[in-house]
Structure formats: C-alpha cells, structure tokens
Length: 399
Image (tube, rainbow, N blue to C red; front, side, top):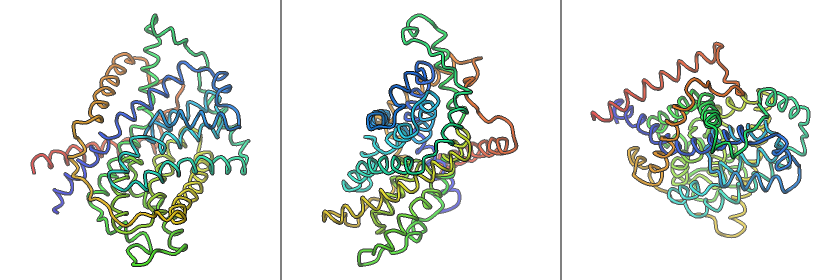
C-alpha cells in the first residue's frame, strides 16, 4: 500500500469511526444539558447521593439506557457529581453507559463471538462491583470534598421546571447553550484522538499489536503468567488505539483472530475510560489528582474483570476458539442503517442548538480551559488534524 492510499484510508477510518459515534455524543450531551438545566442538587442527592445498593443500581440502569460514548458519558457524569450524586453512583453510571450498552453487544457479536458479548455484560457488572469496593477501601473523602467544591462553585443550582419547555423560549436557549458547551469542552481532544486512531489503524500493521501480547499464537493455552501479562498489556494497547469501545471492537477482532487470550481482549475493550484523552478531560473537570485516582481505580477494576471473565469461561468449559473477522473497509462504516438515521436526527438537533444558542456562550457553568500554552497547542494540533483529514479524504476520492 502506497503512502497516498494509506493516507486516504486513515482519513476515511477516522471519519467512519466518528460517524459511528456521533449520535452517541449527541445523546450524552443532551442528557448532560438536561441534568444541568432541570435538576437540583437536592433532588440529585436524594436519588443518587447515598452509598447503598439502590443509588448504585439506579445509576447503572440509567447508564445502560443512556448508551453513551466515552466523552459524552464523562460530561453526564460530571453533571451528576455537580448536582450532588455520590462518587460511586456517578462512576457506576460512567462504567454502565460505556460498557453495558446494547449497540456495543451487537458490534461485539459481529467482530468476535457470543462469548465476548456475555463477557462484556458480565464483566461490566464486575467492573462496577470492583470499583465500588476500591472506592470504599481507599476512602477518598477529602478528594471528593475538594472536587465537589470545584464543581458546585461553577454550577447554577436554580433549575428550570420542566413545564417551562412549553411556555418560555429562554429554557430552550439555556439547553442549547449547555449542549454546545459540552462540544466546546472536548472538540480538540475528540478531533485529535479520532485522527490518531485512524492513522494507527491504517499505518500500523496488525502484527504489531499481536507482538505486544506475549504467548499469542502458541499451540497450547497460555499459562496464568501470560494471561495476567496480556491483561496488563491490554490497556497499553488501548493507549495507542483510542477510539472508544465501539471503535476498538474491530481491532479487538484482529487480536482475537491472532490468538490473544480472552483476558487480553477484554482488558483492551474495557480500557476506553483510562486512555490519555479521557484522562485529560477528567482533569479539566475535576483536577489532575481526581483524574489520576479515577484512572487508577478503573485500571485495577478492569484487570480484575478481564481475568474473572477469562477464568470464568475456563471453569465453565466454554472458552472461545481462536477465530475472527477481517477489519471492514473504511467506507463500509457509512452504510444507510440505524446509525445514519440517528446521526441525521442529532445533526438536525445540533444545528438547532447552534441557532438557538447563538450569542449565549458555551454555558457559564463550565470551565473550558481557554488560554494557556497547552490549550493553544492543542487547538493548533486539532486544526492540523482537520487539514490532514481534508487532504486524506480528497486523496481517497481521487484514488
């Protein structure tokens, strides 16, 4: 493959992955905007402010039905915490909305096997349980207080009543401004992350990722040492391929086809919430101490969950055989299916928000991190990514 062909494929892959995820961004940001505008801290504290099973179960159920991508789920989680939800329920929502989702199971069934569909849902519940135990064991009370003060200092706790939707255009403008504020917060990270993912998918051979996992391709089943090492390397591989769980499934299929263990593949899939772009967004929301704490808790939880799924299959005698599917052509991601319909709907919603939110700013309650050398560098890099994508798309069309 020539450089020009790879450039075109990289651009189409990036655009295809974003096309697959756009509607989920929109849904997550709508949820976040509604939480900000219609929910009071008192109501959120009553619903998700406790430490027992009920608030965790409610948060997990809400995450399951919200079906968000990583960035959108981060925004909704931040809104929950700002409104008074407990840390464990908020993190349970975050894990559920990125792992216990129907469309993710469908994609896994296409590229992997039914074993990994079961592993995703059972492992997602294990993730939440282990996270809960780790937070209770580490007791980060002082850290939670400082984060809550940071969030509440910028939160307007004078919610609109729902009936105002029928009689006051100001509430629609407030919703539009909050929705646009979420995009304003992450557009640089999203652009850079998806572009890098497309570049890696096109330019880095699959053999590299297989090489990362010791014990892959052996005629005998890997021992515990290799299984543990593959579970540890799964998050490292995800650092190089950040697209989010949905976009990482095709690459997980490549690992599956080349004999990577269940533990390594599940750890790779579960790692969408500990990669650098997500860590950076959490740092913008909560500060670096809390961002690193959350990433550490999730890292331990996902390794435990991956190992539990792997050895659970072994104990039941249903471990999957090595198989897999080739990665689809980049242009196949633009099929006219439910994703296209949802994207058209949320595209129209976004255009409406732009029209309603004109002159409203990006939501006064957000810290968008304007200014500073790092922000200017990221903005410049994001615009370079747009140039790369534009050039690559043109090359793909010409070729």
